[in-house]
Amino acid sequence: MTAAFDDLLARAVARTDYVRCSPFGVGGVGGHKEWLHFCVLAPGLDLLVNFSLSDDVRAGASRGAEHARLTVLVHDREWDGDVDTFSADDVRVAAGRIDLAFGDETCEFRDGAYHVRAWLRERPVAVEFVARPATEPALAPNIPLSDGPPLHWVVVPRLLATERATVGGRTVEFTDALAYHDHNWGHFLWGQDMAWEWGFSLPADPAVPWSLAFVRLTNRARTHALAQGLFLWKRHRQHRVYRERGVAMHPDRTFLRPARVPKIPRVMALLSPDLPTDVPRAVDMVATGDGDELRCRFDAVDLAQVVIPSEAGVGVTVINEVRGTLAVDGSVGGERVAFTGRAIFELLGA
Image (cartoon, rainbow, N blue to C red; front, top):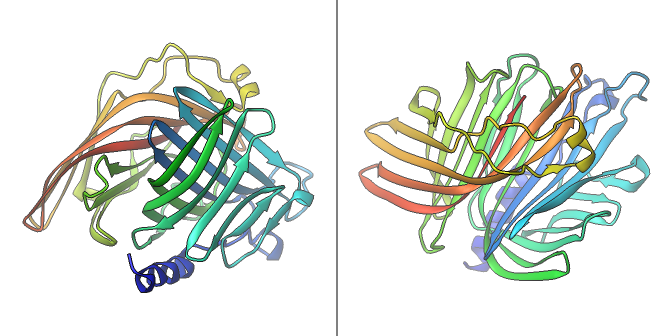
C-alpha cells in the first residue's frame, strides 16, 4: 500500500469509527452501551480484545455513571482470559475519536492505525499490537431491536496486526497477521428480548482478496429475525451487501459438546455452570441477489463464554465466542468467489 492510500483509509476510519459516548448525562435515556472489538488471527493464536462502556442502570446509581470493562480472550493451545473492571477515576475517554485509557490499558487510533495495549490483573495474559486497516470501514446504522432504540455498527473487516501476545509466560510475536475490528453502540439492557449471531472470516491465504462479515439480530428465542446482512469486501472496498430476505441461515441440528466450557469472569461459572450448549456444530448460509449466489459453511471447533449478569431481571446473558473455519463458494457479479479461512462466530442468547 502507498502512503496516499493509507491516508485515505485513515480518513475514512476517522469519519465513521469514533467514540459516541453515553448521552445519559446530557438528557439521554439510560442503558447506553458502546464497545470496540478486535480479533487477531496470528499463527497458532486467536486473540479477542474488547473495550466496553455501559451506563450503570442499577437503582441508586448516580446519573451518568458508567461501567468500564476490558475483556481479553486468547486461544493458545487452550483458552485463557478474563474481564477486568475499572472505576470512573481510572477511565479516560475522548469523545469524537478513538482514544481510550482504562487504567494503563489503552486503545487509540493514530498515525493511520489502531494501537492496542492490554494486560489482565489476575491472569498471565498481556497483549500489544498495532493494527493497520486494509479495507474501508462500513457503517450499518439503525439496526432495529424489538424493544428499544436501534443498534449501530461500524466494521473494518481486514487489518494487518503486528506485535506480540504473552500467555502463561510464552510470547507469540506476529507481523502483518490478519485481524478484524468492529465498533457497536446503542441503548439496550442485557437480558432483554434480544439475541444476535455475528461472525467474520479472513482467508487462509492473505493474497486472496475477499473478506466477509455477517450479522443477524433476533428476539431472545431466535424465532424471529429483526435484521440480518452478509457483507463482502474485495481488496479494500466493500463489494456486495446482502440483506434481509437475501440471506438465509441454516444452523445444524446438532450442537457443540466440549468436555469443558471456559467461562469469564471465572466467578460467573457459579451462576452459569457447565451445561450442554446451544451452539450449532455448523451453520450454512446462502446469500442471493441480482443473479448472485454465495454459499458459506461455518464449522465450529470450540468455544469460550463471556457471562454477564442480567440488567432486565434475574439470571445471566451468555455470549458464546466460537472458533472455527468458514468455506465460501459462489458467484458474485459473474465472478467466482471461493476461499477457506479462519473464522470467529459470536452467539448471544440465554
